Image (tube, rainbow, N blue to C red; front, side, top):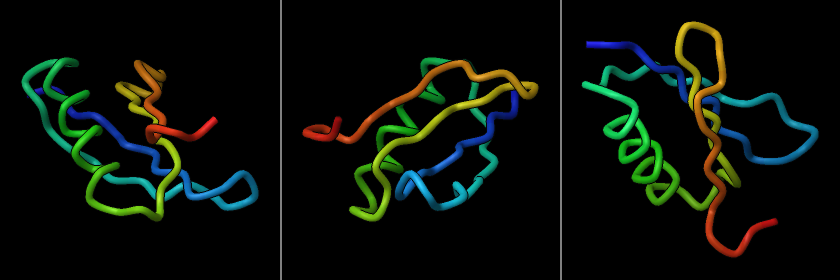
Length: 64
């Protein structure tokens, strides 16, 4: 299974938290990242990286 890194951001001046996850593909990684955002109101957005490259970026609904 491919490994993805979630960079969880809680503000522009804070360093993001990182979590490593395994997913079958980018679609599953997207689903996991969406669920991760929903689990905590702390984070404003998540960037999903694979092999050091950003694959996608998701924002919490209602945030700019």
